[in-house]
Image (cartoon, rainbow, N blue to C red; front, side, top):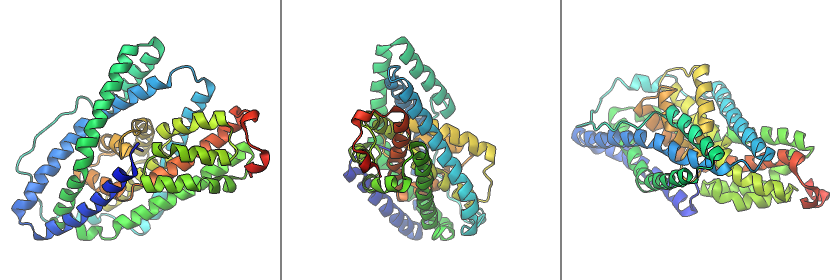
Length: 399
C-alpha cells in the first residue's frame, strides 16, 4: 500500500464514512434534478480514473523495475518470485474461499432485481479516452523498465521517475480527495433508486469475510515458511503482531518497514536478509490487498447476479499481482492499479466498480496489515538459504 502518514490514512477512512452517511441522506431528500447533478460528477470522475490508471502503471512500474537493477542476484529473484507467488496464491485463495462462504449470506442477484427501479442520467458526459489500456501499459512498462536495466539508460530512468512523481502528485491531490465525493454520489444515487436497501448489511459481511480470510492465509503462509525454515510458525507469527497492528492502524506497508524489521529481528532473521527483503517486499508483496480485492469483486458478482468465470479470474489475479508493483507511494495503490483490470478483464460496469471500491476502502487497514505480516514470512523462508550465521541472534531467541 501507500507510503502515507497515519493522519492522511485515518483522514481518508473518516471521509469515506462521512461520504456514505451524507450520500444516504442526500439520496433521501434530493429531488431528481439534484441526484442527476451528482450523477454527472460521478460519470466525470469515473472518466478521470480510467484516464489515470494506465498512467499510474507507466509512471510507477517502470521506475520500480529500473530501480531493481541487476546487482542483487539470486536473492532478488527469490524475493520477486516468492512475493508474486504469494500474492497470486492469496488471490486464488480469496476466490475459492469466497465462492464457498459468500453465497451463504449474500442474496444472489439482489442488485439486479433492484435495478428495475428509478434511473438517473447525467446532464452531460465528457469522454476522456485513456492513452492506452491497462494491459498495454503493463507490457510497455516491463519492456521499458527491463530495457533501462540492461542498457543503463540513466536519462530515460530519470524521466520515468519524474513522470512517476507527477502521477503520484495527481493521485494524491486530485484522485484521493475526490474519492469520498465519488462514493457519496454513488451512494446517493443508489439510495434514490431504491438499491441501497438491498445492500444493507452487505458491506460489514464482506469486510468481515475478507478480514477473516487474511488471517487464515497468514497462518497458512507462516506454516509453509516455518516448514522451509524449520521454525515454529506460530511463535514467529505471534512475534509479528506489532507490525500487524501498526499496519492495521496506518494502512501503509512502506510506512511500517521499521516495525517489520524489528519484528523480523526478534524472529532471528539475519540482518542481511531482513534489511534486503523487508523494504523490497513492501513494494512487491501485496497478499493481503489481493484478498481484499478478490473478496470485494466476488461479492459484487453475487449481488449483481453474474458469474466470474475461473479463466477470467485467473487472468485477473495474475495481472493484478503484476500491477500491484505500482501500489507503493499511492494511497489505495493496489485498488487504483487494479480498477482498469476489474473493468477490462472481469467486465464490471462503472456502478459495480464504484461499489467495489466503496467496500474495499471502508476498512482499508486490514489489507496492509496482512501485507507487512506476510513480508516476515517471506524473509523467514529466505533466511534458510541466504542468512549469514554471524548476523543471526542467539538461536535461543528463534523460538
